[in-house]
Every structure is written in structure tokens, then in C-alpha cells.
Length: 265
Image (cartoon, rainbow, N blue to C red; front, side, top):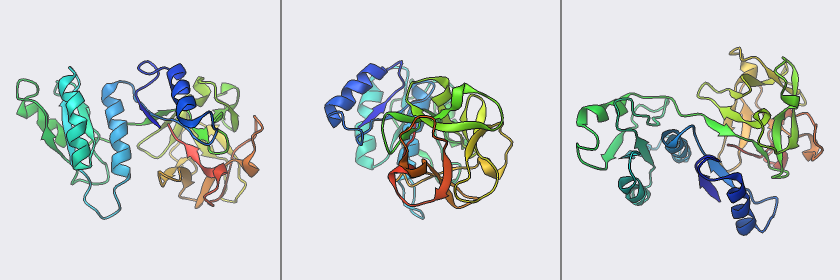
């Protein structure tokens, strides 16, 4: 089950109710939330998932664009987008539209605009050709071992070397992660960091963002949902699939197991 919109649009209580109805309360059936700071960034975030499913070497989809200032085009647009096998982006009716355009593929473009020039002028739509980086994801990173456990910055400390651990999901700032276009995974102004070295079992900590290889992560396969560190060739791992709150996370050989499956925000 997937939810489009942040908690201001669809509350956590509604999410929990949907999860209970859909999954029967099972811990292995999680609800994914795709959200941004506003409706425009939410549409970008959804588009990221569409682009991410395009096989390497294939031409990526051309997006459908609709205004986010009123509802008719925004309601009907997804039908066309679904038929075309692509995503719909919302724009704000200003020259500073907010599309998601892949930073890695310059062929990506908006080819379908819903509405006449009274809604959005041709000159303003030209700003879609500025290739912006993807909007960051934001929210909790949930464990594949238990949907009730999340990646957590221990005690919300912003001290270099502070433990990154498994903890009960609680919607606090210590669990409000963002996946940034520069490859970093951030919380409370700092970065998810491998604490030196490449050996399996190396612990993961909070650290000030510094551009180092220890802070580079890739979302490896959207079905598997692994967080992969290119410099070491290993994945973010919950040691032995622990469900004990406070267990510090580590990197380990990627193995497609539940301790390495993360429901990303």
C-alpha cells in the first residue's frame, strides 16, 4: 500500500488504519508514504519512483504536467499518465515550476501539458527544460525485520560519532531522514556515516556532512530496498536481524535478507 502526501494531508492515524485494514496488522506488510514539503515536491517524489523503475539503457518516460493550483487537471491527469506508463508532475503556475527531471539523463522531458495557455503560458513551461535534481525523500526509514522499528539517531544527539541504531518508530526528528541528490542520507543536519574503514561489521554513526565516501549511499533496487555504500561494496545492516531497541547498525556483505531491507521514506 502506498500513500501520497505528508501527515498534514493524510494523518498517521489514517495510515495506521489503512495498514491494519490492508495488512491485517502483519508486521511484514508495510505502508509506504511518498511525501514532500508541499504538493509539488510530493509529485516529484512519486515521479522518482517511476523513473527508478526504468531499466538501464531504456528511454525514460516523458512526464505529464498539470497545474497544482486547482483540482480538475490534477484529478484527470493521472489517468493519462497511467495509460502512458509515466508519472504526472504538478506545477505552481509561476515561472519557478518544480519538476523532477533526472540529473542522470538529459533526454527526460515533459511532453504532455494539461490545460490551455490561460493556465500556464508556453514561455513559463520552458522552465521544465531546466534539469533540476530530484526532490529528497523525507521521513522514517523502517526496518525490514519489523515495521515497528526505525533507523534512529540515538537520543537525537548531533555529536560526531553518535550511534545510529534501531529504535521503536516514534515520528521524532531523530527519525526524519532525507535522501539527498548528492548521495547523502541526512537527519538533524548531519549525515548517515560509516565510522571509518570498509570491513564488514563497521558501525554506522551520525556525523557532520563532509562530502566523504563514508557518507555516500545508493538505493539499491527499489524492490529489495537496500542502502548500499559504493566505496565498500556493502549494505546497511541490522546485526543478526536484531529487534532490540538500541542495537547499533553496521555495514555487511549485501545478502538480500530482511536485516538489509529498509522501507525508505
